[in-house]
Image (cartoon, rainbow, N blue to C red; front, side, top):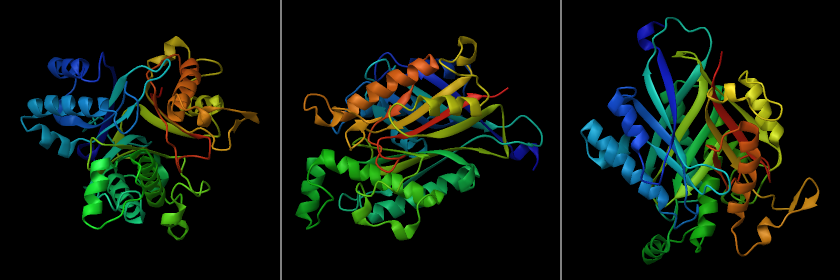
Length: 372
């Protein structure tokens, strides 16, 4: 492989003052630090409720595509066709609203003898309301993940993290399907979000080889918690109509000092998984990351879920019984506090709704950092 074929991933973790604030990204463009043509994908946390009616995700996406479209001299819709933007609403507790920009450039080094951070992206076709959360959605997601892996030049075993964003049903979409004589996976939009996440997670798990095809069926979605991947994060939102996929791994043919590591989180108190992922990247961590090492960390991506059995470490929790505060908001706040204490930084992407994304009551953590 010659140097002209070598690629490099650059990562920028940027803060936002509100869900429409792209000022830090615009400043990078203005300074020439980042070429807008190199932006490959964005993953971020906005300060909404994380539910069906969380329009902070759409607000950010719209603002981003207007900015990218202007800089690329294309329409906002054209920008949305080329750059997946995966957002999770809800920055409860000490989490800080932010977004992570993944850029792809030509590598500057010669032959590469060890893997470096690689990023690949893809989009599925539009997902029909009657398909969402069912096996055709799983299969379409698997195809999209395979396309993203090919885009990054990664084999399944080289992948550490797959981010899937699926559309979700609204009352209007459910009614539109009914008028066409079609049924949807659920009549409750909030319930349908769980099935959309499940289809995204199991589609990615199928593509990665973490779950065999003969174990999958409509009846397994959301129900069979033994089927999961600890390398997948899946979300659902009204701001998109097709599934968006971002794949991160360590691959040959990629230059730079950035690497990604992941660990399975056994439960909502598994801070050791965070320390282990940091150690995999050569970052010392026993209680909290030293201030001198914090700048090496470029992205922290976590999935978490309230244990449906109602216990953590054998003691009862009440997240699922609270009718005042949604359980996903509880889990984001709890895991956010734990992980921010370990990392010394509240700019953490934590997404709830972890159906088939790690073990029941657990999840996953993936960290991108600069190695020495």
